[in-house]
Amino acid sequence: MRFSLTQLTYFVTAANIGSVSAAARRLSISQPSISAAISHLEDLFGAALVTRHNRHGIRLTAEGKIVFEQALKLLDQAQDLEQSLGVDPRFVAGRVSLGCFDPIASYYLPALMRRLTLEFPKLDVQYYLKDQPELHQSLLNNDLNLAITYDTGMWEDVSSITLWHVSPFVLLPKGHRLSGRPGVSLGDIVDEDYILIDWPESKQYQLSLFTRTGRVPRVTRYAANLEMLRGMVAHGLGVAISVTRPVGDISYDGAPLVCIPILDSVPPQPVVLSFAKNRSMTRATQALLEFIVNYFKTEA
Image (cartoon, rainbow, N blue to C red):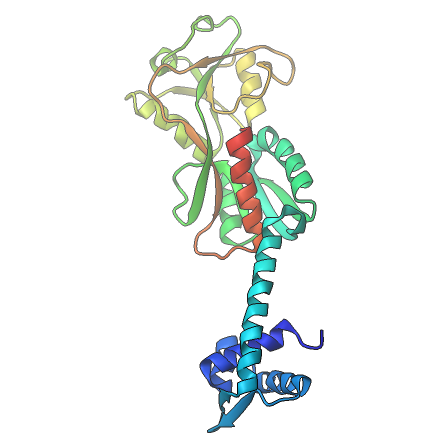
């Protein structure tokens, strides 16, 4: 093919507006580029496609109208082809950065990564595990395109799509006086030694559960991460609340745990896919977003 879609776009835009200079401004290119594209097409088809009047004004000739109509059809077909390729996962390519809240990454990411690799073989996804403040800042700085995390309601400058809901439960050591019950209330544990996870947003969420009952837990220890929390509970150092439950109610060192539902009416914790507001997405990012949303609908 001896002409390009870009040259056709320049010609069609100028013909629609009736001005080379106005077309150049709309396309953010130089006027000579528009004129060169029209001249190339005229040389190729062996006919004048436009008549020039005033300084930069143009009007289609009879031959120009024929080329104009065919060019419109060709550009529409090219756009349809691009969109159809974008829908087919085999043709979606590009790099996307996906962050995940570190404590839940091992719970959700591995299976998602495997499915993504199978369905989008050309998509280059970079994975980053961070705490929630880091995820927030990375989204705003455009260091991350998307992030999977808990919704704490604190990120007003970030948009989120709810993927899933997880319900909080009480963690007890085996043999605890409450461990045989089918459920416990927050009032049952408010006077127990309480171990609080040492993450700002998670602390706020857990304490808010007690605030709803008008009580405050007796916090005696803090845990730096989820497995430390589970281990401390398993060894009788206190009780705790968690929303993440790995398969198998044992700590890393094999000590048993008991997980019991909370009887109080407490809000579930949403798992969300977050992205910066008012920022355009590449086709690759949009494809990953849609994949993650659909994945959680069918697999979570």
